[in-house]
Image (cartoon, rainbow, N blue to C red):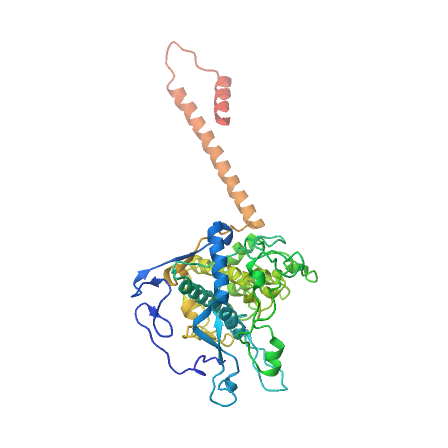
Length: 449
């Protein structure tokens, strides 16, 4: 793949008008439906733990259906560009693939190494979907593509991918049960329970060593089962706990979308913070793994390996929540495309670059928009409030004390004014003037009530 993707492979595409989209303009843009793509539609992405049992079962069934349904529009290349026409130079090397496995394959392709030739070490310095500004825009479109594929499969334009709020702290995976994404097997602690449909899933794109040494690329061949061992990496205690709720609150306050060098060492960068290379407040620390990265590493298995991670369907839920944080950041900071780097980002990550390997072409700037107004979906999320720091607590205490003093002073002033008014209105004859001590005691009593 080249930065000028996709012109290495294709030299023209359809330019759709009005609300039509797709490789042949037969689909509708996100947020539109109907024969003429003139009816608004909004998919609502909700916390998977808040779905009704019926909604939950429907989602899990739909995922399993996508795993077994051949994609109606796309095939994948099974050989490198130089060999794409086959040994005889006349037989294209493409294969059918299922909807969900296509979702896995596109992610694998975006992080795959570049084969430099037999006997040479493959070049791994290019990642089109991580460690740069496009981390959020790439994964946003990745999810949107799957959601729209599943909407078409189900013939339901309102179908929405739910999310997993992974910022709950602790060392328990609350969705790792058979009612949700699969419990541990009773026979092998790193496999899934046979009571979960996901225990029958076989993964693709696992032969990374072969891809790098032989020059092959991932094809549609399925291999072993999903592996998962939440909080089980005893060699790295740091990744045995999930992020805390306040980590999200702190992350949302980081004011800059991204900062030079627009990479995994960018300080005070919202993108690098939610990706998980900065601590939640935005400070860069090479030893830190937080938020998105920490959630992946916590799963400790298929979901913790970049090239394999989408094989575990928790990937979908983890990334919808990451996208929800991104959308909330865009809203809170009223961010426009000018804050997204135009140049000097890693290859594939600049603002106007097309995202590899999606077709028809889609650029990063097209995904740097608020979702409800532009992309046809929204989130229902209760965002945590940020805990106060010491300086803020002191400031609030001082202000509260000043307010209290002002209230006491005002009350005392009113009491004195009332006493003077009472004195001026005493009858001139027939009554004794009140004694000072009695008046003081009365006013003092009133002022302390």
